Length: 264
Length: 288
Image (cartoon, rainbow over the protein chains, first blue to last red):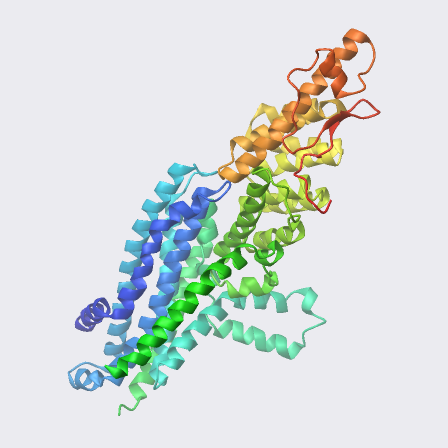
């Protein structure tokens, strides 16, 4: 499995998609000047922009690498030669996943460091209203990374059942968009205001969908990092275990489907 | 060779048309009516869903949009031109209200909305409702009650409410200024001083050059007004009667040099003896 992780990492660094996406990191250079347009929250705006950029880069990487990794192997028929080696399909799949996860961690460590420098510069232009709490910033980056690792697992699950890359790519994007609003929908259908407008059946369906789809809004700690608001430790713990359990389910499902899949 | 003629011709033709068009196109975009520039604001719920995990970014970009728009108008006004079209204050307010729904902590939105909703749009209640909403989130921030206190005292003349806000601002900031504001200026007579104290405080913390200039102009106008008020008081003390006009103060040597309203208005003394200006502390617009 370690070998597959290494191969995955090497493959990503050679990938054009990766290089193109990482070119976006050049935008970090413009953050201090963009943030200085703010009236009263230059530092806060620079944190917003930095975290957003990290999040956006990780999203692109997760969607494209996560959903093309398996598909490319199958398309190029590498899977034949790999699976003829004494490697189980499950460990091949997990190796791919951990390789991608490790890669996302490395990327966010790098981008996080750059963001730290950028924020430091911006806070020199105009001191923040409240002192920056660097540990909240770190937490925000870590949880954003976990979120996209979970998304990689979702992409892999989708690519085990699909023969093209359309389903994984667009399926992952849809999952991502839906996962951000499920909490809102859930709260709306359970609010007293909706009791008259929404039928009980729809309410049950919406609740069911809420439990099935990943809920990624808990991973968003941007507000805490930007405005130095202490996050709840209990919530972080719950979110962490949510991540572990949900990713385990996705990977388990992916491995089961992948094991049964017929390779042409 | 022949096969290249067509693509080369196509490229050149395209380039020529592009060069002819780019001038008019750029000037069209530049002179587009301002309302169109501010753009359409989708429903906040849609925006919140679409922005995914980027709500803070979406909020900040709405604020930036309004700021750029308003900054452009103020810039024109400062060049001495009369604004050809009144700023779309309603649209600005809508965008900023949307911004704080996306990111209820964004101080720029409150700060900016408070500034134009009061002085320009004269929607004091809307401004204070927005500030009240912000106070629920920015529980550490003394600026919001400080603004709300000023609005209550200066515009709404609700001194009880203003004291409450100023007390809150004083508790949060630990500065005596706000505590003393709660008591000292809560009367009609101290209005100008109150405005000067308020404007100096916000001018000092302003980072954006266009907005800073905006506050400096307003502050200058109030300082001029204050100078006339002091001259009035001196006149009354020495002569025992109220002066009837600003010109009278000047002729008799109470006021030198001549006061200038940076907004292009004219200072006058109304029938109750209060000094006012025809500009009402805002740049003139043609439609008014």
